Length: 245
Image 1 (cartoon, rainbow, N blue to C red):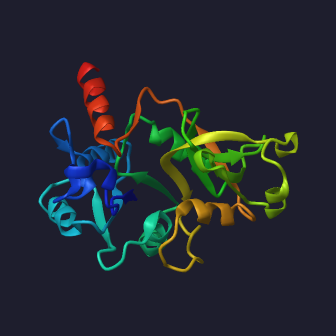
Image 2: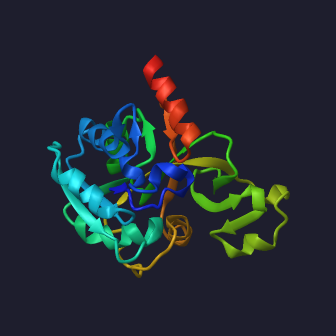
């Protein structure tokens, strides 16, 4: 599933009259980069959610011949955020054993073929792909790489799977956790979100709820490159890197 419904406000003028998914990187829309990377990695059933200028994305997909069966999850009437969007699309996953969710503004050379195979062979319910990267927002995992919380360090905000932790000082050694930066990429069993109500909500909050009873695991990745293209300066940096490469 490609998450392409966002407003793209951080890209400023680039999304005034078109969706973030169709912003170009080296002459090619981000959505096309994403679809071609996924098909190269063996994914041939793709769901794309749309909202902001959604008709442009639908038209783009209809007029390009990709090596994939592409379905649209239409959120033009109501933007459902990252979690609600996945819940709405869940019926479209019924023929799949597992799902990879890929933010449309992520460009990388992550080996999804190997990770998908490893995930299917595991007994875990979801893998959150993570890196050691400087960011204010991080998932928190225990020593067994199981999800136990989330933090926004800039706002000194913590959310815990176990509510008992909320009364412990964040500097306490009793909190034995490690911080990992989320990569905007995650694998999960296709029915994992089926019991949730379809409404606007963050996938972060959903994973924190699921981690009370499910195995939500950090999968650390080491790709040659990974870019979050949410801002104009990040687009410029990615263009420079890829041109040099």
